[in-house]
Image 1 (spheres, rainbow, N blue to C red):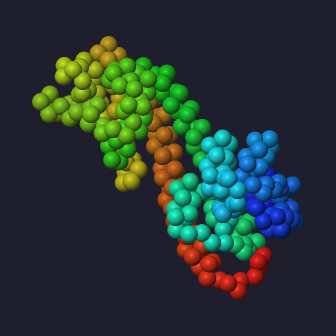
Image 2: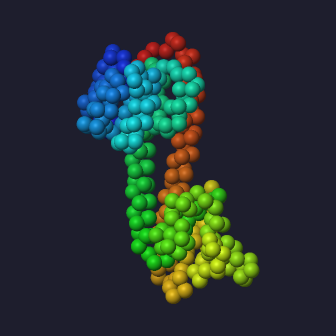
Length: 284
């Protein structure tokens, strides 16, 4: 099924660009735009944001395809599929670092192109939904009075709400990717109960509870911080329900990243094989 996606083709070979535009129109994509240079692509995308960009890696001009793609992603967060007939190893490394949504080896094949476009659109939609859900969850957790800290399988902090910032004296940005042990210690000298690690070395009156959630690569730790006068009951139940959603979304993202890595490996192999297919016919 062909989506109703707006496509921007960025290709400095005018004949190839027109050929690709005609094919896209023929299979049902509405009015694909063409840009021959990076600067033109940025201007056209700003005027009429595309849903996906087909970008020649070896683009001529002051801005090559990789730099143009980086700028488009930064300003519009649009999925980019690279087109290439050949690229040296350094260029491929640069391209991979931009986390493209796909590669197409020239001469392209219709089925390959169609699948790449639709998969890029689907993955991008999933990522946007996940980001919106995470933003909603973070906003919801910032409204509760108890402090909440979430750590990943490596026990590094990945989330901290506003209440936890106040209780720990650390900002979320400062704590992110730091070891959880820097915030919450096992409290071996206090009956084994976890305790908040204070910077001044004093004992904190904040109560800590640590829960393990998930398993394997998606395992994490959830720490709830509670002041001496606060009660855990109903608020904690709401926190745990919200965190259950966050863990599920983290698992979905982990699966997406694993599939992305596998797809990149297959595409790199296809690119290497494509360079050897000298006799292949375009648009087969």
